[in-house]
Length: 485
Image (cartoon, rainbow, N blue to C red; front, side, top):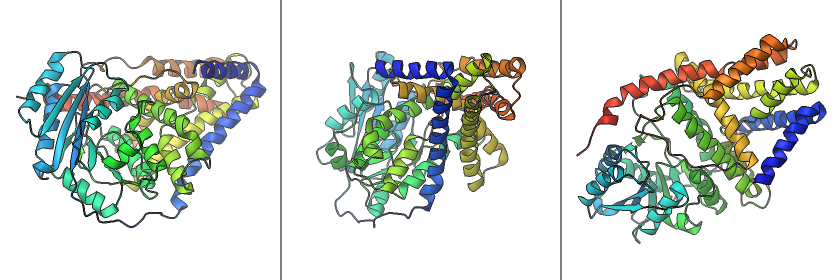
């Protein structure tokens, strides 16, 4: 890992010092960006490869796993109450709460007390020293799953599922014959507050997951997924090798020949990240973890060594690169070249082109999806602002993962008290750098000017997104402070 970081940093230093080398690097980045942008229309032209659904005769028995770490106890209890109130026979499912590495008894003991009141229906486990973050916790839950369970269901600690969740899951499994199904993530109270943030997050499911459904190669997204226990065990369970254990499992399931489908039905809702800082941490983990997964399984996905047809390879690649961004490198190189008087070179033009291409990719995806879904113009613009505000973190996450930096699993704060505060410093740094280069560097090329103007956008976009999340946090304040009995 350290060798990879040293090598990449060495290439960047050489690129900055020798514009010819930098030109090659920027040309490669532009080519990669263009290729990834071209994948979506190519996939849309591929024939659907769905197999006929097979009715399963066996009775489905679910084991619902709720992994928790330092969660507000009233939120977890609210989630458990919804799971207890399913219209599925009580003997046909169990609930396992796996609390890992929560040191404060005030956070896990109320949950343990609630679970103890339902001894035949909920199993509560509390473990310290668990390795592998959420993957490690889910593997412990898997080890405690009833022998007769047919499917494992994962539900995040803040998600309140609908009463017919298990019935819908059973219907989807019967109808599709899939080995695992993924329902979309959805969020409470976003209609009037933070609809743009909700729309930005929803774009992944409406675009990438929907396209992957047609190839039966949907990657898991952590919550509201239902997996055949046989399939899960056969691929070795969950892995903590990356910070997106869900996407990693999805790749391994697909490679083993199991079929995964996306079921576009809202079956439960959770909480949005409660601040811009929390939203950024979440996006950093998603992006860096997916890049880690791509590097880990790249040989299977991109070469004949993998057990995938072309359709599966392409949709898996688009899912893992949903938030992929190489913009950090051209931004750094363009800054150096403008400061050292090389702003007129072909290399600088290519760097500017790469930055503009990143913005074009963001705008085309968010705006096109919003228009197809008939979203109001203010919602589309707010969704676009949210994606632009998160662009610096996506760029940093991509670079860190490619460079082999050590990545840590970070749980999204749901208490509402840790993430609020001033804007991240990176937005201000990017804004000031671009502004100084525009005013002091006097670039004459329109392409470079346009790129620098593009780099001014994340800061105002972050201010707008932060305002939306503040309104969201205020709107759901009662549920956050509610104490459950």
